[in-house]
Amino acid sequence: MKLAFIIDPIELLDPGHDTSVALMESAQLRGHEVLFTQIEQLTVLQGKAHALLTPVTLVPVKLLDQKYVIAEQWYELGEPQWLPLEEMDAIWMRKDPPVDSGYLYATYILDLVDPSKTKVLNSPEGLRNANEKMYTLQFPSLMPETIVSQDRSIISDFVKAHGQAILKPLHGKAGEGILYLAEGDRNINSLVEISTKQNKEPVMVQTYIPAAVEGDKRIIMLNGEPIGAINRIPTGGEFRGNMAVGGRVAKVDITERDYEICSALSARLRSDGLYFVGIDVIGGYLTEVNVTSPTGIREIDRFNNTILGLKVMEWLENSQKAK
Image (tube, rainbow, N blue to C red):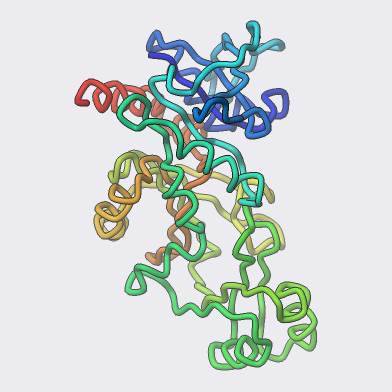
């Protein structure tokens, strides 16, 4: 198969951490042709989606003593060329957030790819509709108590009612802009004003889950089924467990409660074309559904001596054969 990956600049990726690199490596190991592009290199010609696609050959990382060994020159590029995206068997949309106007326009271009010829993962429509914070609100029984508001008094009353709360920007990623709010903190009004841009932009506020100190579990789901998990544990004085802010990773099992959550999400994820997602679970509560460029595969593989990317590629191969 020919697989195209829409990614951030390849030279900025970390092959020992980035799931995009893990997926590209696995595609190569399965004998597929791997190409990549960026959202700035998508265009429409004669009514068809095209991209400046660059072939890439990767030197796969090696796992030694639970550490990844990365070649100094871990990729080699071929000659870029403009090609119709429908010449690809599958396209992986793996551009990191924010989901800004450029990102949204890219999904409109991907709408022009004929799904009978080329599978787009995740679905452009699904990406537009599934804000990674707001999507969880479709499953209120699985979540901690949550509000979404830009009204300072509503947010302040929520914090007073619960004593502690977590405020999340709706467009954030990797823990950026997440705040811990406590009743009695004289900075609350100022923090809410900054986060809501003077009451003009809504934010999500959730009750604080004490189990957060034990970790924020990332579960990778493929076509509605969990395939692996990793725990991200806050370190030092940090309350966030995100790896991007220094969270420590640890091996973790998928529990019965986790399977219940995944089962409740499964049908909706499939119907929305969200084939590869990462859900976040804290203390048995669903807190986020990550659909843009969910990460965690490298860390799961490191602790479990697996190569989940190969499982993903085998599923993709079978799904294409079933067309």
